[in-house]
Amino acid sequence: MNFMIIAIIVLGSIALIAAVVLYACSQRFAVEEDPRLGEVAAALPQANCGGCGYPGCAGFADALVKGADKGSLDGLRCPVGGQEVMNQVADLLGMAIANAEPTVAVVRCNGTCALRPKIVEYNGLRTCAAMHATGAGETACGYGCLGCGDCVAACDFDAIHMNMETGLPEVDEDKCTSCGACVRACPRNIIELRKKGPKGRRIFVSCVNKEKGAAAIKGCKSACIACGKCFKECKFDAITIENNLSYIDFNKCRLCRKCVSVCPTHVIFEVNFPAPKPKPEPAIQEEAKAKHVEPTQEVQKEEVQA
Image (cartoon, rainbow, N blue to C red; front, side, top):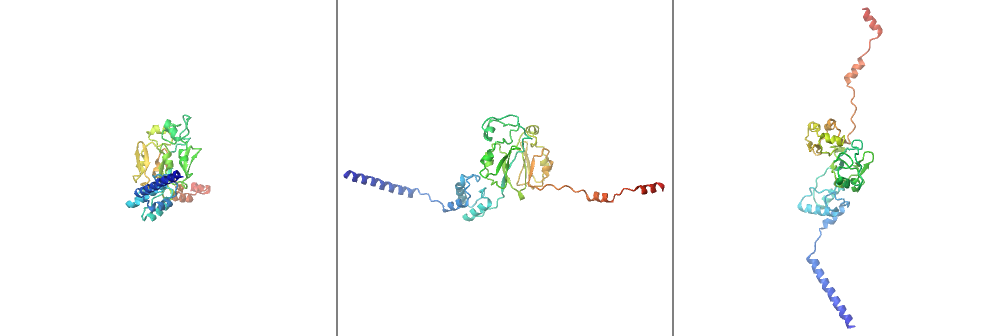
């Protein structure tokens, strides 16, 4: 019986000492959490997509609180929640935030099956990453879309699908949240986040081929050949040519569309613009036609007799 009492006393003493040590450690090494973290995290959409550049919404909430402590939220944006969520966060943190223009994912490749036919057959792991690692892919263009749908698998919002007829991915801009998952998933960097533009209108070069003109056309009939016609036509310095490839800066582009009409390979795309109206026949010609009357045979005879 004495052994049991001694054992209880010893174990109780050890538990008491451990409790005191744990309490002292918790007080000594305690980390106080900013109460704003929970409020900001609750305002975020909890998509945990990583589009903000941080590991999930919790990491982004921490970055927002730290940014508020520094007095600026510049460069911090939730692509899924958009401006509405960022306004809520700014109100919680007592900060002002500039309105950011919405962006959308854009596929910069026009190499359809008709324009870029297959020249080899790939037998292996059917992912863009694996195919890209093994070489140029199944076509002669080593820059264009590989068509395996890594971008589709990466999208958590069902905003991008493969077109079986063209072999290219297509973005549903109404569902796209600009999280950037498809951009990171593409091993050839053909997907880019660009401004949606007024009324969803935007212009971009749908090609990333950096080969010289002849080689680019050999790989794809609708490739940029860096001829410079678009560069010369643009009056706003929105177009640059680097590494045999034209690029349109969406921050400078004024959507005049003059570059679209001069491109010989039709690689500059215009999205959500109204169809051009047919040119009416000049009013002068219409009036001339209305006034023009063929002379009758009787009039012609009178003229001859006279």
